[in-house]
Amino acid sequence: LYAAHSQIISNNCTFVDNLSYESADLIGYFNSYINFTNCILQGDFSDDQYISNANITYSNIEGCHEGEGNIDVDPQFINPEKNDYRLKPTSLCIDAGSNIEDLIEDFERDIRPFDGTLELRGDGSDFDIGADEYTPYPFGDINYDHQVNALDIQMIINSVLGLENPYIVDVNDDGTTNASDIQLVINATLGEN
Image 1: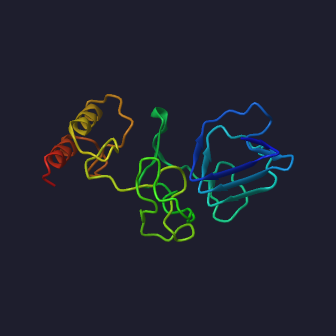
Image 2: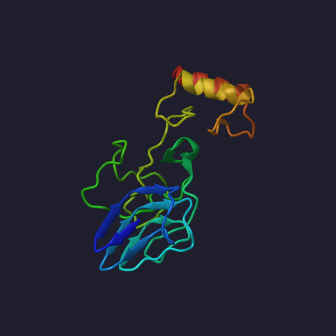
């Protein structure tokens, strides 16, 4: 991101795996102002981040940056290899943000804020860091699409057969993916859990 004689204001955005053609990843100078709140900046960011006149708060920045509520952790995206940058239920970005007035939905139209943890994080407003506002997924929803259906059954069968599957499929948390997990997902698909 490069700002010269300009202003960048970014709320609840996710920036990942970007390349810089300058010597730094975040550049703000020549009467520029940068304001990031509740943003994720991760992947391919160098240690060379020249930032001046910046207010960066409640953000998850690789290499971190001084500012209230900022963190530097793996955001735990669902499947970044397939460009799925929604947050896993275990992400520390959940509820770690700050209230943004009049921001009431995320990019999927999920209501913002949503209390996704029992912990007090961020400023206590339950806003998530990043573009995604985590909402719980139904039991058996292997691919995190908010539906339990035949695709989830196929994904868990593929995992049991040793075929590639980018999602966590140990539904009953017993340490292995097996027929018990398949049965639980089938039951969930049929509405029998």
